Amino acid sequence: MSDVRTMLSEFKKGMETLGGEMPEQLKAFSGFVGAAQKEGALTVKEKELLAVALSIARSCDTCVVARTVNALKAGCTKQQLLEAAAMAIAFTGLPAVATAATLLVQTLDEFGKEIVC
Image (cartoon, rainbow, N blue to C red; front, side):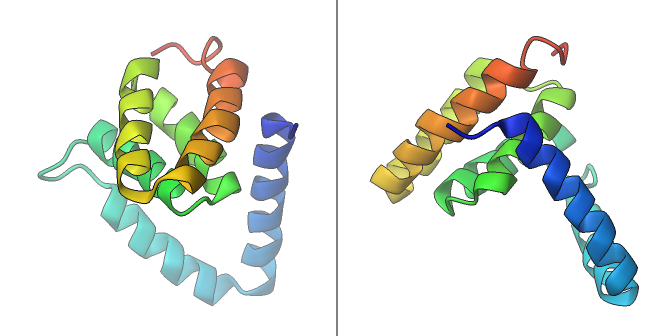
């Protein structure tokens, strides 16, 4: 079983390293991501639910952890996150079930109580 808190910490550390090694590229990428995440026709909360569903659908372990934490911080509830996972599962099947059953559940268990929704 993976430690989602360690995964998140290692991701942040790796991003800092990449930022130091290739600042122009990471700045450009981060700018696009930041613009995509801004409130618009969809709320930030809705966009975080989409990000969780897409992360599960793509089976991106680190993405699932990071996006779930962001979604909790944006005020998403456990039930909303589980419904987003259900949509990923409906469209991608067993790989999404495996990702949701492990990383989403572990991240909710680890961070859900400390991040007030």
